[in-house]
View 1 (cartoon, rainbow, N blue to C red):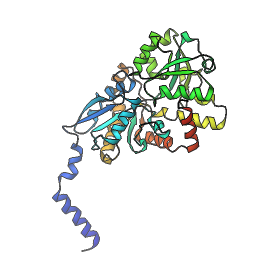
View 2 (view 1 turned 180 degrees about the vertical axis):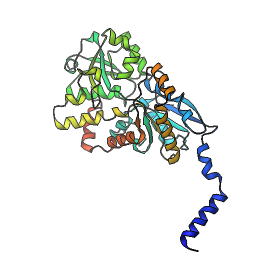
View 3 (view 1 turned 60 degrees about the vertical axis):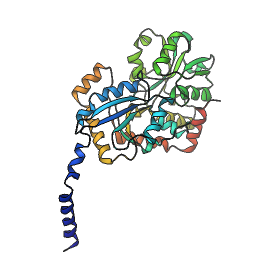
View 4 (view 1 turned 90 degrees about the vertical axis):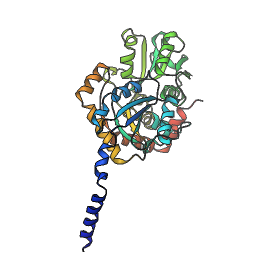
Length: 340
């Protein structure tokens, strides 16, 4: 018997002996539930995106598993990312959504960031929009230059998130006088603190979320937007400078580009490392199918959610680009985003 004939015979024998192998995988999710971990409280943009996805994703997965949302706030998403990397099941029944800035936090050596974002299985991004540094109009601060002449209290969650790191970057690069008030439990709690006058602004506010959650602030001109962090200006904010527009040298532009590079990651969903490849691909295909599902799109519109798909492999490439940025650029960004 030739080698080729023997190989064919072995394959036939194995297929006959283990007929369930080929057919079991499509039914893996039947009768199961997928836990969708959210790295924030129930008031945040990630929770809204997770619950929107949870209502529709299961229809596009063979076996139609249920999707159970579990909030895990802490350290601006670092707690949930550590959980996904260190403790979560790796069988395809756990996924997560957390702060898009966590690859940046990893690259700059954020405290307690024990994960490696490039090793996660990135499923895809539902949407992205720029982050904004905003202050209450009552402060009279309208520009970055104004913020160098007056102390401004900025509400924040934890030390590693962009509500803290963006103001610190501006302080160290331009001499602004933002003073952090940390420890708030969620973004909407910071908003309430702004309304009460406890703090004057937020170091990071997603543009889409601001339009949806606080349209009265915009309508009544109660908020000044000082700068937007992203790689392209939002169409509606054509007059607000990008962080990279403020660069005074080529090297400074590299640093600001690095800081802004996580924005397209947006509202990305992710699975732990070492999940079987076929299950990762199953969820990626289901995610992409969900993004174009008419029923999902109707729900998204009713929820005032924007949908702008970036496939998982593209998100993964963005993440790898962030964590492989030249060391000198990372060191400078890390120094500027740290308290002095």
